[in-house]
Length: 439
Ligand code: ADP
Image 1: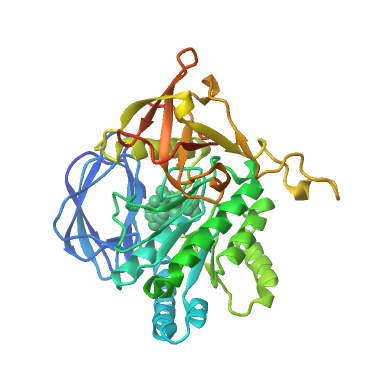
Image 2: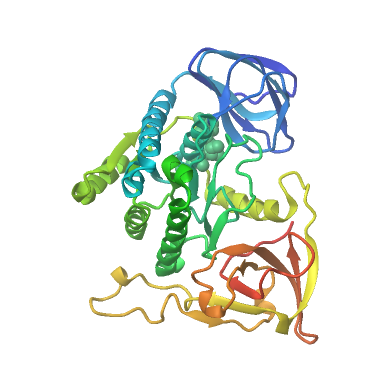
C-alpha cells in the first residue's frame, strides 16, 4: 500500500469520494497540482493547474468528491489512495451547522440572546492523533467557503494551530484555510499560559479559558455576523482525569452546544464510547447540547513525543522566521530596568482533586510573582502582555513573543529576538517554562 517513491513527476487518478494520503519526504518539499476534476485539502479547494509546494514532513490528504487527477513532483515518505473515508459524515455535520447558522442569522435582529443559543458552538474532542485539528479545519474552511466567518478557538497548548505552543487563542476564519500556510497569523486573540501541558497549572489554564471566552462574548455582542457564524473549538488530546475536567470546563465556559467526539481505532479501551457516555450523562441537564460520535479517519497519522517536540520547536521558529524563512526577526538590547518580568503561580501545582480532603494547594496558582532577570531566562520564550498595570497581566491577552538570546548580568543588559525592531508594546513580560533552542 505505502510506497517510497522516486522523485519523478507522476500522475494519480482519484475516483469519486476517495483521497490521496501523503507524507512529504524528510529532505525536500513536494510539488503537487490538480490536473483535472476538483479536489480539496482539508476543506480548501485546490486551484486548477497551479503547482503548490508542500514542506518536508507535512502530512495531508487530497480528497475529491467527484474525481480528479493529481500530478506530483518530488519524493514522499508515503503516498497511497484510500476510498474509505469519514468525509461524508463530516460534510453532513457541516450541513447541520450551516442550517443552524442560517437560523441564528435570521433571528439575530429580533432576539440576540436567542440567536446565541442557536448559533453553532462546536467543540471537537478526542484523544491525541484522532484528527481533531484536521476536522476543525475542514469545518472552518467549508463554512468560510459558504460565506460565513466562524471563530476558531484553539485550546490545545501542546500543538495549537493559531500561534506558538503554550497559548490558547482565537481568530475569525474569513477564507478557506491555506493548505500550506495554515491559519493567517494576523491579529489573533492570544492568551499566554506558558507551559505545554495543563498539569503545570490547571487553575491558570481555566482562568485563561474564561478570559478568552468573555472577550469573545464581548466581541459577539457587537457583531451579529460573527455571533451567528458561531465557533469551532479545538481541544487538547487529554481526555482523562484532569483532562476530562478541563473538557467539561471548556464546554461550560464557551456554552458549546455541539460536541463532536472522535474515536481512536486501535485503542485498547473504547475511549470514544466511554467519553460519549460520560459526556451525555453530565450534559443530561442541558437538553440543547448534542453529543455526536464521529469516526476517526484512517489517514490520521500518529506522531510520537519526539515528533511533537519537533513540531513545537518549528512553530516557534515559524513565528520568528516565517514558514519559508521569509521573515527577518530583529535582535534588540534592553536594560534590565526597562523590562518587568512576571510569572504566574508558584511552579507546578497539585490539582485540588489530588490533595487530601480539606487541604489547600500550597501557593495561589494565579498569583503574580515578579521575576529577577538573570541567566535562568536564557533561551526562554516570553510573552509581551497588553497589560497597562501589573494587576492586569492575568486578564490581558498578549501582543506577541520574544526570545531571550543573551543575559549580561554585569552590564545589566538583555538581548532578545523580536519579530520587529523598535520598542515593545509593553514592558510587562510573562515567563513560563517555554524554551526554544534556535537551530
Ligand atoms: P489531533 O488534532 O487529534 O492531534 P490532527 O488532526 O493534528 O490530530 O492529525 C494528526 C496528523 O494526521 C496531522 O499531521 C494531519 O495533517 C494528519 N492527517 C489527518 N487526516 C489525514 C488524512 N486523511 N490523510 C493524511 N494525513 C492526515
